[in-house]
Image (cartoon, rainbow, N blue to C red; front, side, top):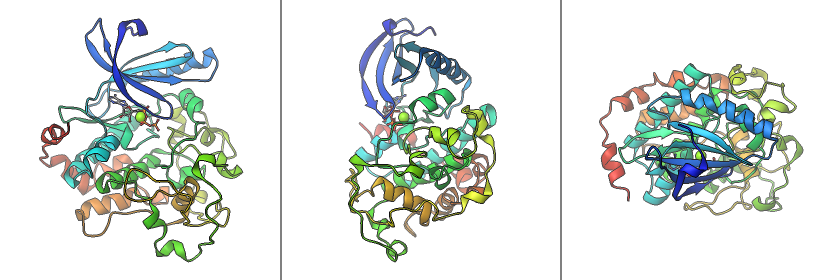
Length: 372
Ligand code: ATP
Ligand code: MG
């Protein structure tokens, strides 16, 4: 498809994220309804052209677990990407509107993400880098698909600087600026599934104040409000909690690696993954008075507390006895802090929870019909 703005009629707004806005459009010539994502890139035209070239790989990403791509074009100074329109929207808005997602539907979601990530990595050597509920979409036929993965190294570099948001799906190793791999996506999946099953982001005040965190609490929590966050030097490089990938991982103090997606394949540097306190600062630990309110019932930690919590504290888990045992076990595996011991998406395709969920008869059409 040869896409250009003139051929697209705007049908409505679908949402906006840190990187851009998404609009529902009709491509008049083909009669196709699409979701058009517009991203502003503050870079030279040559860089934008490079991004456009890199995005062409999306034409080859064909899987039932992945939102299809229709094409991308420049509309200076923006880049427009047109993809399959998913009429039920993303899982974050679904659970915020309809409440926690049942264990059996979570199972189907897990299958999609695990298989989708495995496809992207095995076939294209692509690491997603932005697994989270807003990047898992649903349509009226009951299909679930992932979107917004990092195909273009230049695009990642160009938009990774934005620092917005109070939640993060970043793995401990990524927060610390260590080598990033496909296992970091597995961590993000674990966080996302807990969020969907509980109907709230799993790192919340209750947890921050639980016993493991209290012992060293040093009570100087509120000098930083999220809105006016100053980022400490050694974290500044890695902060970009909601963006596909921190530029820093490729370019700062740690080893210099190519910004291209495919370079991220390298295995972990084991000497780094385990340190729990080297990034600790401010003497703060588990304090949460600087947090902000989220839609859910609990209070979100401030972003610095959150990042420190992820690095220093035990990982979150589902409340005991409320979910199938295999689901608990699956999530605990996703949230193993040491990436060397965490499974890859491909490993997870063989996990009993995933195999069972694959075979389970779940009425996804009924589920989406119940949403209006
Ligand atoms: P972030 O910018 O932090 O990644 P995000 O994923 O919410 O957050 P966008 O990717 O810009 O930001 O998407 C904004 C919203 O648009 C999403 O939350 C989703 O609800 C909606 N959306 C995105 N792509 C589609 C699509 N293909 N079909 C339908 N809705 C979509
Ligand atoms: Mg998105």
